[in-house]
Amino acid sequence: MYAMRQLDSGGKFMLEVNVKELREQLAQFIAQVEAGEEIAITRRGRVVARLVPPQPTPTEFPDFSAFRAKIELRGESMSETVIRERREAPY
Image (cartoon, rainbow, N blue to C red):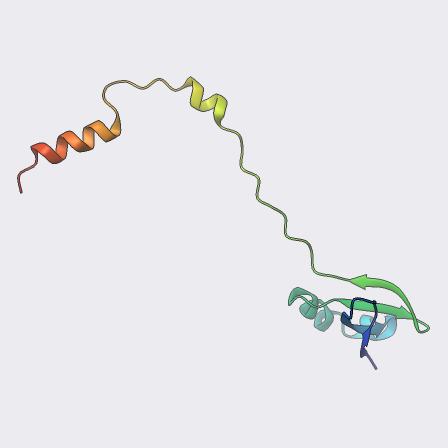
């Protein structure tokens, strides 16, 4: 039978489950970890591993500065075009 126990000095509680129960109910425990819980896995009453949710990885965007530097603008700027069109358009 699994239990909630305080496993660290920070007052954090986590689910403690033995290896046999983990094998039998793996899908259930994976769903709990996906929901943000941490699970301590024990063998003969001793913690041997922990299941924890993955750390969010920051999205890295490519550097387009070299690409932007190669672009040559021709004609009037977009803002100038919008201003001109607004002035010329009838209301």
